[in-house]
Image (cartoon, rainbow, N blue to C red; front, side):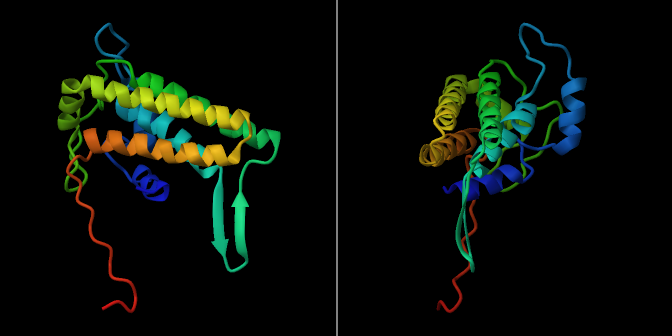
Length: 196
């Protein structure tokens, strides 16, 4: 799966990323206090407020844009731009650490499956609870990949940042295929113009 396709998945409303500004602004403050058995912040809130925006920012830090004018490479060039990318890589590390805390709820309120092959919040919760070691391994892989991104940023190594972005795509998609949309149905691409 390409990074651009995965980014499209991240940007659409979805079970782990659903909620928009209302969920982020209201639910994280309305949740009960942290207890020994249930951390207050939900997986949905972590994905929406920490993981998704941070991953998007780091992915989008380096882009090759093709146009009639030719090829343009966008990348951080100033110290301030690199520091921005660094801050988001650090936030991604923090988000992955938060995902690794056991007994988190998926969401404050139940939600339905968003598409054919996706799971609803109750099914996602059951999968995570029944397969915690696998979910934890994905969270730890996310953390390690984000740390690689941070090292690439600190070295100001654009090629390494792009390469690690591909690894990040694989980690995220693997977790989503396991816990969010295990039976996804991808519609066929329309035939190319002129194809018979």
